[in-house]
Length: 421
Image (cartoon, rainbow, N blue to C red; front, side, top):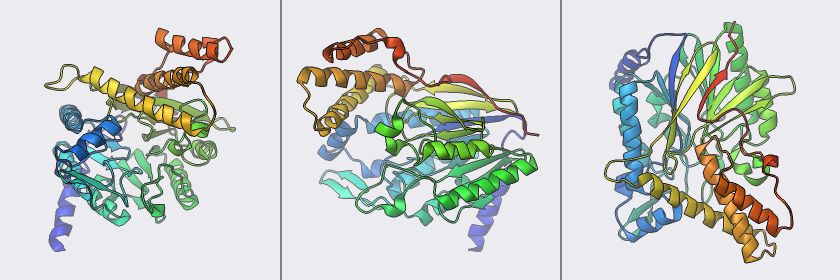
């Protein structure tokens, strides 16, 4: 025990002060939805091939993408790296351990790393390994084990911890706090993970008390959460409710009125930024980062000062040894999206002719492929798909009536922040 305490003390001494030291400007990197699967749980086999086909992912490519992004970060050395959940493929303990080892070199370079769990990270009843003998069960981790494993990634030196969840507050520097919300429902898992999320009432009460304290002390607060806080698509709450926290509009308004200006999220695997203004006139920005597990392999690097947050989105477009990587990965995601779209349409139980089914699936697929990369605008293929579907339905499409993207821009944008008094 004395050895562990000494190790922890030395770690805090060496790394918590290794950021730039400039309290007025922060260099922030964000990645999300890595879905890391330890190589020891995924050997070449029919089981692994079937998994890759079903998900549209290639695990060897995922490893190369992650290594490439971490390599760039080791050169740029941001002050902090935020990881917005779904760290592992399906909560496997070995995947958590393997991912932590991947982070060590960046951490040793001086970047402080903060994590929050996603719905694929904790207490997963059906965690899997892919072996030559087929799919076998793998060991997952508990809520307590998550905070222990990631004690050097936000939990060990948190200023405050929420007793109702894995939410925590960390001090980035003397002028900035990071408020991390655990929006997952792992305590309800029985046979598999639950996609949907929520902010527990006790957690919200805890968070509001901290935001009040920050306002009194003149400290700026940035947030992080796996699930979306703000709608990123028209009718997202109706068609994809599991990708937003319950009562998102109410919660977004409460947090905006409490002084939270920006929150970094993931979960929907799209590069998108959206905003919500409360009835009282306060605005909060939800900066959603796409997945590093499949196209478009996006991540963000930002600079924040007292007046604004400048966002630069990076995309991994190529990897060593695969000249057609981008196009292959795009086609893989499109194939999976089309299959999911048709399955959901069939599940509606509404009689639809094959021509209408194909036209509607085309619209859904093209919209999704535009959305995941961000800054979506109707290209000729998209406009044609919409017009064909409308024609089949006996209507004329007015492209300008469609809302393709909520403001602001998604990939390269400056978000205004109020000066903290």
